[in-house]
Length: 283
Image 1 (cartoon, rainbow, N blue to C red):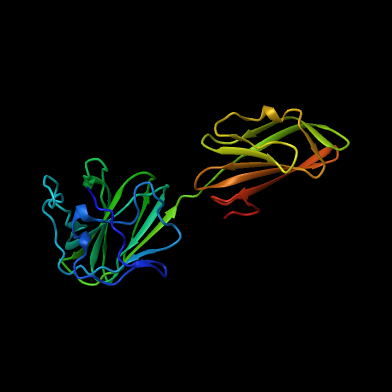
Image 2 (image 1 turned 135 degrees about the horizontal axis):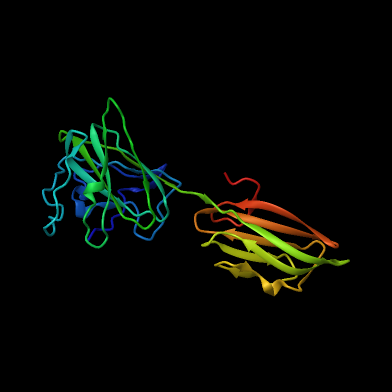
């Protein structure tokens, strides 16, 4: 099985960086360096940085050897360019998004492919690769899917090797929840009495209703988002009825009813991913 390895060095500066090493332990496919563990967050805020020295690295005719056998050979050609002296990295997105991979230092090839967590076989048929030349710098940019497993291969053109900088950025896909609410109420001299509240929101959204005073919190995680227990509840002037529509990694919707004597007003805001603080803008 693949090893779980800490990135060389410690968290510093823009990302994870460390001193150059003579022979990276992630020379072989099955010893690839993990940028995150499956099921764990993939860092979106920082550029992950590694400084390997690929001197002495090799190319495997069987990517399962060591420690076993029966795997395909490493790919060694990209867009007509031959390469070798390879190293490997793995990552496991916890959200849909995109990655940017850069490898300045010398002429090299950057490859990206999915692999099976069960068989460990890489999907060579759908491999993406770019030739990155010191005279014409290229980076590999690609969409990635949550709960899929990816491996990165870096190799020197015509077997070039030496000090290299590896730069990895993950840009999670930010979705925005569209939600609305309909409140029906009876006017009272001191505020309102709720007749009904319904919320329209997509499937997969968590809808929470709260009052600053006068009602107990309620949560619905699947439509229809109706809250019959609010029927008959009296809210006095100055109270607020708050609705939070959220989902992991998404810009949420916030709806607030501000109660007045015999009436109410409606305010809509947004919620930054993971936040419950209403904002005017979440871009």
